[in-house]
Image (cartoon, rainbow, N blue to C red; front, side, top):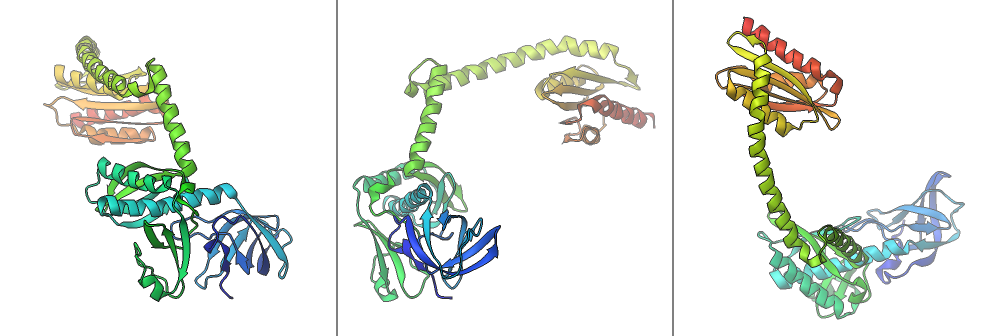
Length: 406
């Protein structure tokens, strides 16, 4: 089979075309169609495939084999027959989106070279955002802003982007940002007076079509920087989402959008201070509660076992009470709570005792259909079986009594 003529190679803006059907396999529930030429881009080079319709049938995947033949996977056959001439129509929004992201990647990669001396080693075009891995071992916000500024300056100048189909010898004379692994005719994308890069993907005709490049985040991965970015319509969508979030927060504080960071910081500091004071008060309040529980708890040898189940007490409250019980006199606290639709357990013992709370709690958590563990003196966990909370605590208490009787 001859390689398929790739119409997108010379015109990434082509959204409709006609072609002859060379082969069709499959039945009414799905088909694989080969055409003599196509504008549908197949998955490859970090870029997903196009979608659309061929002869009225929905295109759900596009694949290129090793021979350069492009296979169109259709949801249904739609009456397509070998030898017929069909009309292909691409999903405009998907093509434009991929075109903006891929073109933006070329510019951003060269911007990192110029601003930071950092080469791009990989590219991934995702459904919501895209990423590049660049050779920056200690990435910073300053690096990101510098590259972003260079990239957007090129976009705002609306420079031409040209496609060149060249031989290996001609490619060797071009200032390519990266070498091509291909042999024979090589497709090179030029951004006027800025970047030359071999690439088989879809690209804009001018940089202004990209609209904007915005770096969302970055992280250090395998001695490189993984940079997450959005271009064009994705950048607008991301701005709207971020702006709406900022305005919502501003309304909560009854202030202007740009004043919210300082107010949020102040609120967090105040909350931290209040939580510290509340913890101090809780530690005082838990003393009489712990004393009452100990006064009614049965003794087992030279220590007491406190079994108690509460409603809507979180793990922090249970830990505080369990620790206070173990501190006031030799005892083991087996505490449970029905909290937010699940069962919680906290087990603790006094320092003078030797029972392993971590092992004991793990067994009890299995009764609850969950898991947990911890140190020999303090452990916590839980599970979804709220109705078995009493059974789980009783099991632990019996094991302690049996162990102490030996």
